[in-house]
Length: 298
Length: 245
Ligand SMILES: Nc1ncnc2c1ncn2[C@@H]1O[C@H](COP(=O)(O)OP(=O)(O)OP(=O)(O)O)[C@@H](O)[C@H]1O
Ligand SMILES: [Mg+2]
Image (cartoon, rainbow over all chains, first blue to last red):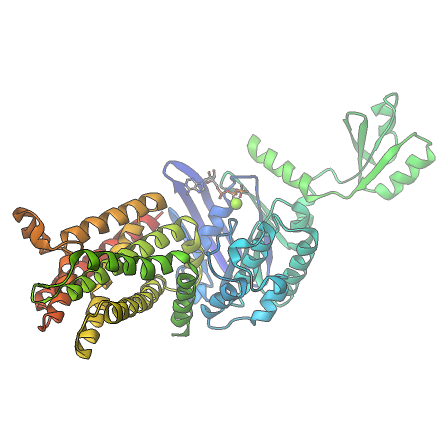
């Protein structure tokens, strides 16, 4: 079967600034891809090109095997853009209903109001909503046409914890239905939890492409950190079994190990005076830093 | 089709919710008409009663002012706000977006015209045959279309404040030139030669012809259609160029 998205040697230049360089990848149906990268990496630009909002300088972009500007493609995609722009003078439900009319098949109004938790605000003028509510409305609009391919550009910015939970619950269900989803976010734990593939870009170039697990292998592994008196030497800490690295951050020390369960037992038995202990699994954040730094050096 | 209908409905609701619409399409022309009519007394002008002549002039003036202003400012604002960007991602064709605006403005214009004509008939004693009332309404409505496309053209300048100034200024000048605010005969001779080519003059002329008992010149139709095509063609060209980033 054809991939849902195909990018082939895509370049984008704004006047003399190269924003996307030689980007090529394919995305299969049903996959959940997180597009990660520092500010200004070119994520929004890449998504805008895939949506047909701006043209690439060179290279080819195909969605469902067709050009992004074709109506047949637009019928099947939905997107939450990074900046929400809503028309004035229409209520929440009028706006959602208007969008429902744009698509050949659309989801019911009540469902859209429910997943964006806007039932109570349905009669409110869209412009008067709060920032987070506007974000949710924009989510409802992106789903109006029951899209097969959904783009989420920093979707949860400004959403409170409860909205965020509802949002991810809905997105998880969409994923289970076999929708293809492209996410950008700076909350890496979201990407870690949801994505089955991560594409990292920096300065418009692809730096790594893989599953979250693969990416995390690059890091030093799991760690235990705690505050300890300064007399404890690094050397002494290295003597605990399995410790691969010791990093001091002021009074706080961080011990890396593949087996943190064993290490914590040993540490407690050693009667070391530890305060404010934190155990953390290797996370995407470290992998992210690792790859971005590696890309800078090369 | 239901997509286009939904778009028209949304645009129409938006117009109705704006206080400015009510002010510029109902209140302003009415006040203007009363003031003008009081100061001109009674008599005949160009083969028609003065009150009737003024009614048509003010109706034309009111309609072109609001059409150009509303469309240009709305269009510029919605592009600046990124609303059109959001729409570009949906299957809604750009032509639907613009024509829905024109259709809704058309309905507002019709209401404004009917209201003003009722005022004229019932308070200022304007007397016309039913056929004349209807033909004037139809003429003025249709002849305002080029001005709507002019509004879209001006709206392609994306800075709302500038659009506001340019559209008001352009329409003020065009209305003066076309004799909507005072008869074209009061202009200097050299200017009159050009004034007869203005869309505003042709719009007014058609209505004045109708109240004087003959049909509008065919030439007026061609000139107005020509303007409509030029404006929309230019606007399309500019929009295409702006979007090719
Ligand atoms: N219309 C434009 N004209 C000129 N430069 C632009 C334009 N749009 C974006 N850029 C530049 O392109 C680069 C990439 O921008 P982009 O918005 O794609 O980054 P991003 O990865 O989405 O960043 P963020 O995480 O901050 O959203 C930035 O340096 C930005 O300044
Ligand atoms: Mg971005």
